[in-house]
Image (cartoon, rainbow, N blue to C red; front, side, top):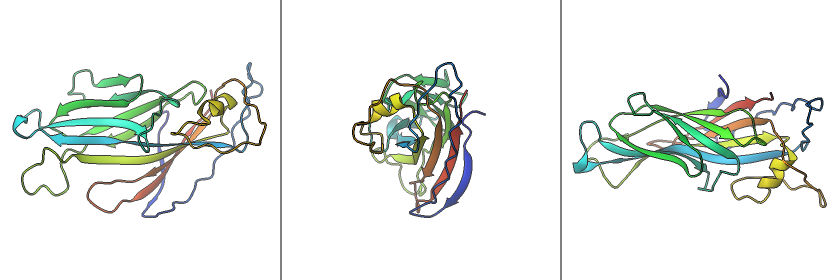
Length: 228
């Protein structure tokens, strides 16, 4: 499967080990050569997850909660400069379970009664990466401690934090995100001129934490995105 996530190591650690980034293949023999920035990385911190509210007196047997699934910048920045569209795959019991969001904010709202796994596919702009990244998130409707009446004001939030790292990005991609608040980019030498955009290959490094009822565990994952 394209964009399949390969778990590397999970441990409770404030500073997880950094994975070695493989060399980017040489594509100089392609019809249109893509100039990349050697020894440069672009980092895009993201958060994806769900937020669920109990409907209280309005709840029914088939609709007990209103929930939102989302992908956003780590501090709620617009990540449309990197991500072109997001596809959310819901449970087959929903009408039109494949939901496509073409522009930010990359989120959708629904109502239901059950918990299930949501597949989230990130599609990037053409000069960023030519393969989608598949993420998976479990919709959580009920808090860990279910004693007492259910609150209609306090949401149940389940989130994961990821850092998407693009090694040796195309110069055009770098130029477009150079001063964007959602993107972490290194400084280039003074006087360096960036030309038109191109395609880039990407490597996805994930630092995942779970923030529902307990100690946050950090998990480092890897997902390479290759060339065509």
